[in-house]
Length: 199
Image (tube, rainbow, N blue to C red; front, top):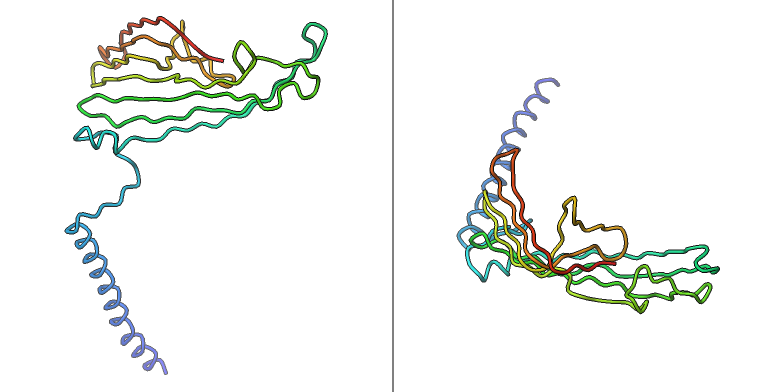
């Protein structure tokens, strides 16, 4: 009985090895076929491009959806509230020769503002308490190991100016800013802003 079982195992094992070898060969053939046919499966878009065409072809879409509700108990003797829906939508290209561009629109729309008391709260909206949409980020950037420069509209984070991102639209600034990396522990920044926006 033992001899029969061992014999059976010895007969099955080479077959199993043969099947696995065949599978590996088929997989290798498929890989070679895809390579020779120039098929390529990308799980992540490249961050650098070798031409202007691929710079935009490798652009990544950016989307942030937000909704917020605010209620203040007493403002000038009355409660106010607001419900807003919006977010940030745009794209950022891959880098080509160190250059890239980024464009984002920010939006905040008034949904049934003041439905409870009839008194609108304008914290999420424009001066007229209506919704808004505007191009908050539109810039051209250059970066290498030593130097980074951005010109146009964008977000910055410094002790003196930052995005203050705590409501519907973070602060963005118009101007130019740069960063120079002198070493791993020392860098210099220069910034110039002419306008800012946020809500």
